[in-house]
Amino acid sequence: MKVSQRWELEGTEREVLEQICAGITLVDLEGRLRYYNREAARILDRKPEYIGRDVAACHAKQESVERIRGMIRAFEQGRKEPFHWEIERFGRRLLISFSPLAVEGRLVGCIHMAVVKPS
Image (spheres, rainbow, N blue to C red):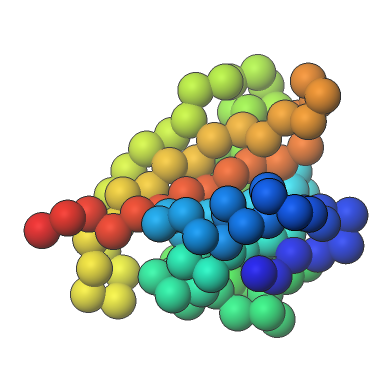
């Protein structure tokens, strides 16, 4: 598990996120990647050097960066519902959801979840 400082996970929470069959990535409100789990590394090619970097540095397509920033803005403006879409990446069809992450009622970032679509 890779996680940046102040986004540490402990015990059961860490084990659940590491063993779940979904790629989980946490992004803060400034658009910096703060955490990813083992499955995200496997299906999304997440790397340790991405922790703390702006997602713009991790995406080749500018339209992807604009989409992520737009979704973060929507959450900051009060949207509670996740965004959903499909992509093809590394020869796999992935189902993606991007949801607000609130801690004690305060928006702190976003949860990016990816699962491989069954064929």
